[in-house]
Image 1 (spheres, one colour):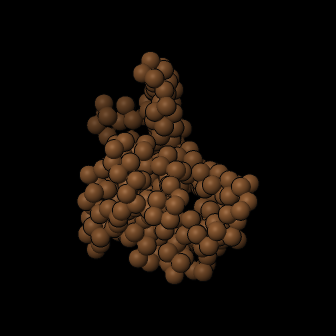
Image 2 (image 1 turned 90 degrees about the horizontal axis):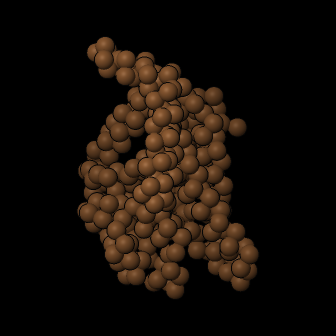
Length: 268
């Protein structure tokens, strides 16, 4: 059980720390390049489920220890079950569920990419709502180099960057720089390694200062409308905005703006 101070033991596969309404989850297997192993996937899924129920958390930072953000699936684990379709299929489904849980999480998730993110590790970055990378970070979907096309990472990546850039990554298997990732739209911002912590923290705190109800409603509506045609998207978001406007926080926000004062959010 995690200690009452919101932290986890230092030897845990994922470190969890809560401070000022921001939860930082840190992948903590640097010696193995923070793989999305069976253990890591279970820990991520558990963390997402717990955070989703915690109204005291307003934003999430996804970070990693070491020089690698995440190298993706543990190839030794995958190879050990490679002859069993059902086991391999279950693994990829569980990884996909982790990615979906991040998208469905009421709180926004910010990837703090300090190093290399490859394959499903790159998928992890793409699945976050925002991503800020150190200028030394690298990105790749190198599955083709070992005969395994990065099809599940492609789902998240192709939804945040242009089709031709996505195919360039997927077909080449090459490593791309942080500048490339920014140009493609995979990350929001590039900063120096020294400035990464401050930049991500300021972004998280800015989000946490907003109404949690407004943010959660807006995030859910945003991802829902992406899969709709134009008419349905407007119908969907009109409903979201109507429900948002009739909520106390929105009314408080409008009143505060008109009265030239700071709003007092209640999360409802």
